[in-house]
Length: 363
Ligand SMILES: [Zn+2]
Image (cartoon, rainbow, N blue to C red; front, side, top):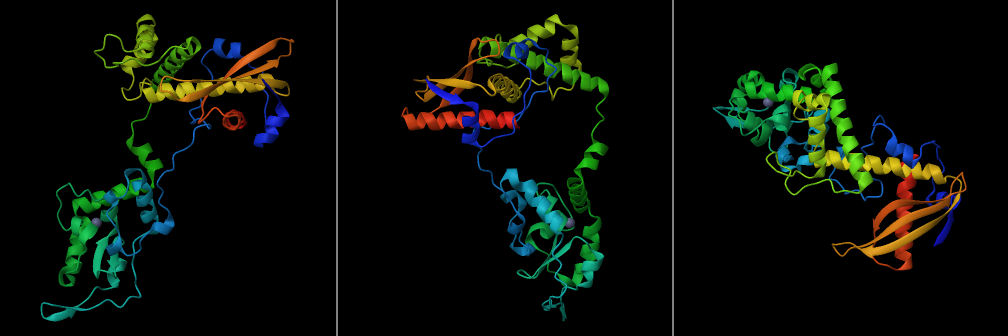
C-alpha cells in the first residue's frame, strides 16, 4: 500500500485548478438522468495521429494538383476548404505562350480572368482549369462542356476558348459544382435553409430516447453486466442486455414507445458508439465524484495486477481514504493495461491514470 497526499499528486501532474462539488457516489447513481453526459474521449487513451492538410500543402499550379479523390477521405473536406479559401490561380502577369492554331498564333487571354471568376491557368501545362469543377465535379456523372477537362486534363483550344468558357459557365455540372462549393463554404446558412426544422415535439422525443439509453446504461454499469449480445439484429431472439432492456422499457412505458416509433429513425441513441459514449460519460462523472470526495485528504492507493482473458497484464487501482464522518472509504478507480509488472511500469501506469482523472476533473 502506498500513501499519497492530494497536493503530492497535484504537483506530480501539474494541475492546480480543482473545483468542489457536493455529490456522492450514492447520489450519482440514485439521481435522475437530468445531468448532461459528456461525450469526450477519455483523456487516458492515447489519441491516434490523424492525417492533416495545411495551407502549406496547397499547390498553386492547377496542372500539378492531384485529384481530390486521391486524398484520404478524412482530409478531403480540409483540402476543399483550403483551395476554396485560397481562390482560383489567376497569374495575370504571366506571358502566355502562343500556339499555332488554325492558321494563326493564339494564346490564353488574361482578360478572361475578369469574365470568369472560376477560371484558372496552369503555367506548367499551359492549360485552363475550373476551380469549382476541380473541387466538386463528380466524374461518375454524365457531363457536357468539359467539366472533366476543366477539372483534370486542362483546356487548351484557345481558338474556341471564349465560346467554351461561356458554355461551361452555365452548364449543369459546373453550376452544381459551384453551388456545392458555395454551400460547403457557408454550411451554417445552408443547413438552416435545407434541413427540415426540428420541432419541439421531435426534440422531446430525442430527449426521451437519450434518457432511456442513459438509464439503461447506468443500470448495467451499476450491476457490472455486459451491454452487447452476439446478435443484435431486429430478428434476433436475444439482442443482448442493453437492447433487450430498452425494448422491455418501451413495452412498459407508452411515451418511450412513442418516442422510438414516431421519432426520426436515424437518431435512435442505441448504437454501440452511443452506448460507449454514455459509458464513458458515466465513468467521468463517477471519477469526478471520487475526486471530490477525497479532495484535500491523504489517501492510500491499492494496486493489484492480473492478466485478463487476452493474456494482457492489467492493474486494478483502488483509493482508500477517511471521509468527513470518519469512515474508511474505498473507491475503485479503474483498470489500466500495463506493459510489465515491474515497479517502474506500475508507477508510470498509476501516474498516467491519475493524470487522466485530474485532467477529466479539471475540464
Ligand atoms: Zn466548372
